Length: 215
Ligand code: GAR
Image (cartoon, rainbow, N blue to C red; front, side, top):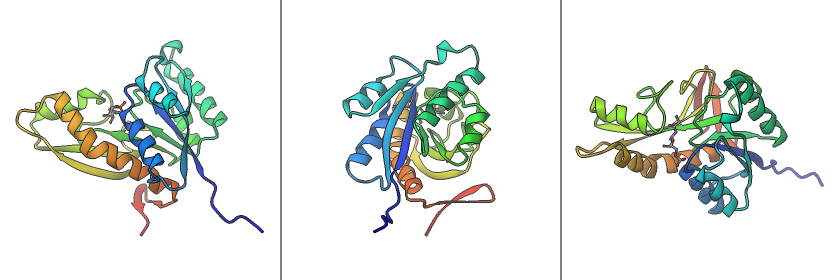
């Protein structure tokens, strides 16, 4: 009898740092919140990223492709692309990956790469806005609400179709570190696993360059 069940999607997570978003994905997978997907490999741009330890503790395959070993972004993107093809990635998740991917990767995986950004796009995003810098800019501006965005990755930094967003209150005495932590806890760690699960269930539709969740 034919097996009509959909194959489980291979999720490859790209990281550069602490990996708390990776941890949120691992926990979500363990508790059955990610339907139809499995984290099959974690690729780091840094040898000493704590995210690698998190992956190893959970018996997830790791690969290190250090950015510093490559002369330019094009050569680096070629190396990442080769690894993604070897790993047979169905979905690529940028979870605190601090290198912009070359267009050969975007073209090879259209609407198959998602990123979590620690602000409400289109605020505080694009070239130069990453990690703590995002929160420094939000506090400097004086916004009262910030948050997180999960979006598809296209050729332009932080400009791909938005999948999910969640607002988070900014408080008077926030430092960039305090705001970063609140945004991670209240927004990033929730919407990233949710977006991954929606993708793995084929519940994200693209129309006129925008992403919509299927009813
Ligand atoms: C997260 O806040 C993520 O949104 C941000 O870096 C942090 C990584 O933390 N990503 C960017 O700024 C990308 N533009 P993590 O390694 O603990 O997940």
